[in-house]
Image 1 (cartoon, rainbow, N blue to C red):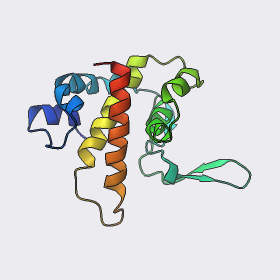
Image 2 (cartoon, one colour):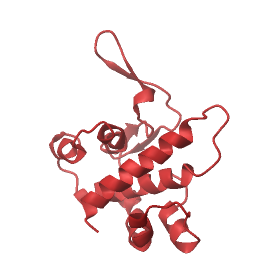
Image 3 (cartoon, rainbow, N blue to C red):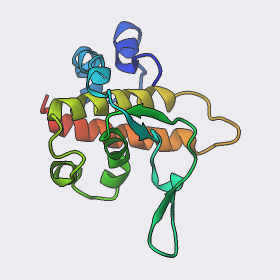
Image 4 (spheres, one colour):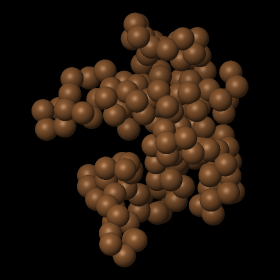
Length: 159
């Protein structure tokens, strides 16, 4: 992810259309965001951009993961948590999913919240940039993901 987005919003003028909860909690979001890398270390190969349009359901029922533009190594739970906002957007209880899934059930909830915070900040910042010519719908996807993730984060943190 780029430089910390919530910190940048807190230190400079936040976007005029930033939601009220984020605006009220910018300093706390910036602090939480600053801790995500402490929790993300690991040796698992990560896709880091899992979303429905980067997956293909094959005729045998297996899922092929496409578009490996940002592979890296990190904690095994990162990809599932990064996919969770897309899952939440379809009405699935992501907190229950993460609490029961083998890859995330033993992960400290603070680690998950810190990563979600960084992800929401990244999407909030990126969604306000001009759309890349070859991906005109990317910014709408990022704006929707930022909203879903920020709303979920607010429920998790109860700030």
